[in-house]
Length: 484
Image (cartoon, rainbow, N blue to C red; front, side, top):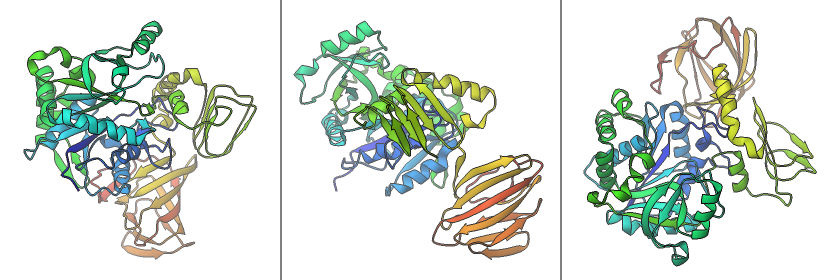
């Protein structure tokens, strides 16, 4: 295998809610299997297979660190680094931290910076474009990947190049003249007709030292803060925790605004700006209408996932995650059903989902942040039902995993083993329970649940008490470094 020439930097820290109710603030779209059996994050790393890669660096939010680490493990990667942002500071600090981490041992790799939540239909063409841009990046250029537009889109920023697309049918790199803001319809039509403008994909390739030189020139305060955050970072099992106090000092800015839009005019820096065209069936999956365009559709232009039945319906996106969804006479609609929420909207108005999410957050509704199914480092739980003074959960524990040694002030718990074997600590006792066996955890008693077996452990937990919130946990021991 050739020596690694590219380090992927996957930017996975966003908490976008434009794909609510599937995407939630603490379980965002990049972690969702929107376009198949694997998540968008996993798809992003899969499409890089076959390239001369080193261990990827994933930059993520600490809120969903455990599910991110689990998805990386599922890919079977021999090595990877998961950098945790203690607070969201946008993509420029994220890439800066990754570049500093990649150069900590004196190396200067080529970084391929890509969002974790994009979709590419033609994976082979994408890999070919990366290889065409690699010599430019190795020689010190900043390579931007520009999407060949198939329509006059007003929702994307554009990249202007010196050479027309008609002269670069083979996809050779060309000079970048500048970034252009999202245009009106007339300007977008001119861009597409002229053949010199491409959509800004947000995917970049450059040496780590080149990025550090550029960010140090245009935004030295970002570089200084990130340097301190990386120098004081703590290794924590699967994670590299950037120093919270240092990182918080960094201004929040995007890669585009902090550097890329300024770079073509900064001739004194001596950093060439190049564009490699991408004609690969790309989508940023930025809203439900974009997902409809990315998914295969039937003869009536409907895109469906799950148990969906349609009658006299055309041009719809219908997703059923939990139960049966039936549509009659629907035209150009989005219908998304999850275990605890349903969205129904005209396809043309799905960008307004963020308004609903904002109202839910203002009202203190959990549906804005979390799914009914919540991932934990040891597995997951699903809140099946709840009412006054009771809550019922389905809990699944991975083989070999252990919950914290804990106690509750306000609730008691009943556990029934549905599948697998449970090792239970209850006060001074240790119990081994098989299928159809149960135990009772009285209020105030120290307890722990473990899965000593080779298959997932599944239990039904019935909580009862005066307060059932997740913050009623006193942890005495925890394998995952959690304090509450």
